[in-house]
Length: 56
Image (cartoon, rainbow, N blue to C red; front, side, top):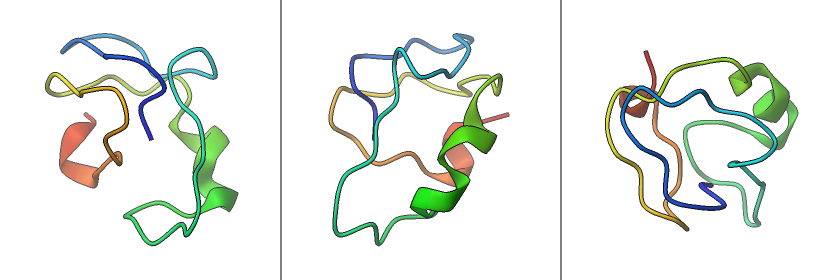
C-alpha cells in the first residue's frame, strides 16, 4: 500500500510503500521489492492498495 501520498511520475520505493495484511491486492508480499523503481502512472493516496494499473 502507499505509505504516503504518491504523485504521478514519482518512483516507488521503500520510502513510499509498505505491506499490509491480509495481502489480497494485485501484488503479494513477495512482490513488494519488485515495485521499487517503478513509476506511478497516476496519483495514489496514502493507504491505497497499489494496483497494476497504478504503475508504468
